[in-house]
Each structure stands twice: as C-alpha cells, then as structure tokens.
Length: 400
Image 1 (spheres, one colour):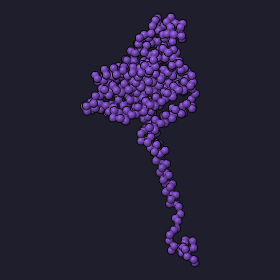
Image 2 (cartoon, rainbow, N blue to C red; image 1 turned 180 degrees about the vertical axis):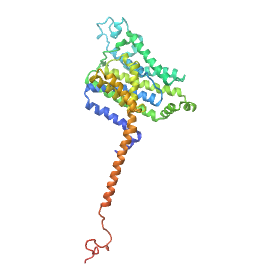
Image 3 (spheres, rainbow, N blue to C red; image 1 turned 90 degrees about the horizontal axis):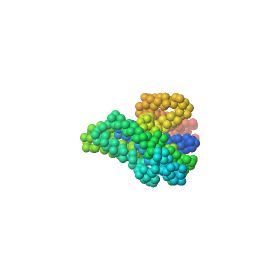
Image 4 (tube, rainbow, N blue to C red; image 1 turned 60 degrees about the horizontal axis):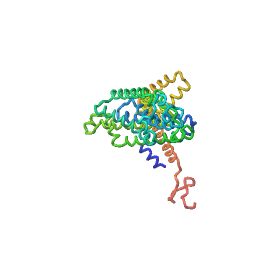
C-alpha cells in the first residue's frame, strides 16, 4: 500500500484519483438520477475546459470560440440521432416521410446528400472528432503560419463563432434553425431517456473525461509538453532553436477542438437536443470562464471549475431567478480577483503548504513525545554481578 501511495505521489496522480472517486463513487451515491444527469451535462463541458488548459495554459493561445467545436461535435451526433428518429413509419404523417421534421416544414423533398453518411453510427462517431479537428487545422494553419496570435487570434475565433451561429440559424431547412435538433430519443433502438440509460451515459462521460485527462497528462509530461511551455514563455527562442512553432500551435489547437467535439457529442446524448445557443460567442466565453475559475494550468482544476460554475448557475437560477446572472458575474469576478490562478492555485499556494506545515508539526510532536518517553523509562540492570543494589546496598548475586 505504501509503495502504491508513493507511486501515485511521484506521478502526481493523487488529484486525478480523488476526482475519479468523487465522480465514480460519491456523486452516484449522493445524487438522484435527475441531479446526476445534470452533473453528466456539466462534465461534457469539462472536455472543453481540458482543451483550454492545453491550448491556453500550456500553449499560450487564447481561443474565444471553443463553442464552435463543441457545437460541431454535438451536431454530428445529433444528425445521426435525428435520422434514426425520422424513419418512414414514425414520420408517415409528413409530406415527405423518412426525412427530419424540420426539413419537411421547409419544403425539402429529399434528404440532402451530405446528410446521408450520418445514417451510420461509425461515420457519426468519426465526424464527432474529425469535423472539429479539420476546421481547427484550417483556421490554425491559416493564422499561425502568418504569426497571428494574442488578442487578434481571440477576436478571429469569436468571429468564427458568430459566423457559424448565423449560418446554422439561416440554413433552417438543413440544420433546424434557431430551434436546433430536438426529440433525440434513441441510439440504435436503445432509449436514452430511461434511468438506466442515464446512469450508463453518465459513467461513459466520466470514463472518457478521465481518459482525456490521462492523455493530456501524457502530453504535458512528454517533450512536446515541455516545448509547449517553452513556446508560451519564449516563442522566439523556440523558433530560433529550429522548431516550427506554428505547427505546435496548430497541434494543440486541433487537440482542444477534438476534445470539445467529444464533449459536444456527449452533451447531445445526455440532454437529447442540440441548438445554436451552444455555438456562439456567449457560450464560448463561458467555457473560458470554466478554465479560468478552475485554473488554466491544471487539468483537474479545470474540471472542478466547470462543476463549480455550472452548479452555481443551476443553484442561483433555481433559488434566485431574478438575480442569478448578477450572482454568476459576482462569482466569476470574485474568484478571479481573489485567486488569479484559480482553484488549483489556491490548493498549490495556500492549502498544500498549510497541510505540509501541519503534518510537520504533528511529526515533530510525535518525535518529542517519543524522546520524553525514552528518557523517562527505567534502566534495566544486567550483566554486572559486582554492582550493589540501590535498596539493600548488597552486592548483586551474593548472599548477605
């Protein structure tokens, strides 16, 4: 047990193990299925926060458009689910049976060609990762090769989020418009609305999130992670050392996009719909807030930040519906002003040193008590027959 604990500590996996116990054991025992389903929805945002830790914290590139990749992953999954829910029998009352209802409302008479591959689940799962990654590669390559960065890149990603939102809303016949894609109930005939399905989807989301943390930790501890940190702090020095800084940025941008796409797909599965309200500028900025509150240099902290912000949003909106937006703003401003490094920074700079001091004090007290006990213990007389007894004055081992 001591060897296992030492190994966990040496690898820095203690916080990951604690998070795993919290998500896999504590939350399912404490929360009912409704609240657990909410936690699963929050954890789907956690994938975006992990990507921002890698992109913003390690790569030094701030993106304000991660909602784009979250939405693309969600729409890729929603397209498959919508086609499954639009079989000819279910849609027989439509003018054109066999196509999604919003297409029928907009006078489409056939399924568009680019929709047809999404009738197959393997292609949809591939698209969940591939579509956000390809778009991120196109944007990243075009920007980073021209050394566009900093606030300019952040503004460009915001513009992309706005463009995609307008495009989705404007192409109502192909995307569902402002309402999005709704009434997503089954996966290959499996009803995702049952309690057992919600438990399965929650654990699926949790395991994938923990796997994503492991992947990001591996990247951080590799040479690539070291180069990302060096690139963030001294970009010119890394460039002059012969490395292609632009392609490192493209890689980490694509990694963040792929993680966001996975989160969007899991969100669609658990909630049962996807709409442009999760794609635009406002949700993208909220996703940055998750990473900022948790700590942009900590993967586990980003997950805690995501849970805290979304728990706060739910609690404030339920108990104080007229003030919840102001309270959320106060929470974000207060946390970022009081703890610039987020929750992870509080743990590293405040809680952890305090805990180590307490442990050192307890150890010192135990050593002092042991030393006092040893000094007060009676000395056992052995092996010297010529010494006199302190009580009788006689020589030990001899008769008077």
